[in-house]
Length: 357
Image 1: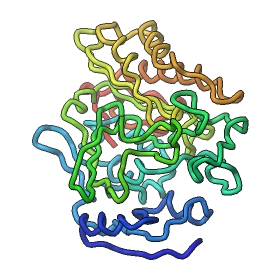
Image 2 (image 1 turned 120 degrees about the vertical axis):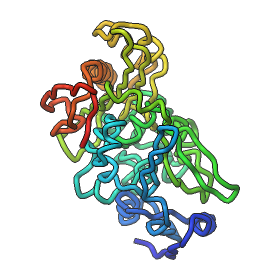
Image 3 (image 1 turned 60 degrees about the vertical axis):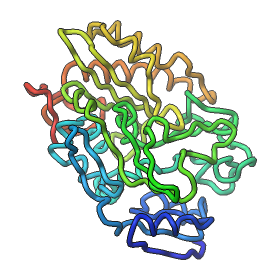
């Protein structure tokens, strides 16, 4: 690991000023950053430790019926907050499907948004990677592509974003609160992560030194609590990133779908919101034919980024149909014992359709 300077600021303003130095990086739990530093994948010259910043570790239920999740709220604390899990069950299920219990006890909300791709070529400093060294090329292209993107990729990068949490957040129109030298601003989570294009080294819309302070879910998000699920297909039942995942949330009116929210994970370099599929579902009966048409629309632009990942397109269709089917059946009264897993035991929905941890 290279030598670096270390700063522990006492306020958000001090943190933003400290991180304005070229080569600086924010440090919270370090569950991703420290691994990257140890492997020589990233070499920050200045770490700005934000773990002691006041007020960023709170879950606040707002007067407008939305919720504000501080940047430093731990994944486990958020998933096991009973009030939060009842209102946003797909988010809780996504959190509990990720990593291990030990990591969930450490990892933070903002850190989850900022985690880097798990592409093995990105993690190998000996391999060309446009994310690590712009212009170096993409070793993944023509390489081992089984887990790589099928939507939104470019010749410069075919990696995927690894987050579980971000998928239901994107579906539910979450907003990211950002502080910077010019003040504060809100960014829709669906627009927070960038597709690779010709500059895959730019992964988010954050300007240098900007700091995530919170994530907000709007009041409408809780309106899907009775019919919301997160489903994740992975190589192991636990402690594995998604091959493909899906968040599905429905609002049913008179036996038909009044509104749908859908997003896919593991298919692109950002959570993939399926707007056209949502539009097709509105007004339809919650039946397999409608779900299949929505899945076809969601994957209409998909194409393999390598010979080994064509299967992900059909897998994504099937997992979206399965997630919609589970959501239509009703949110279970408890998070399944294997959260997010298609192999989890079925649980009967509660009368209110509200899950809790």
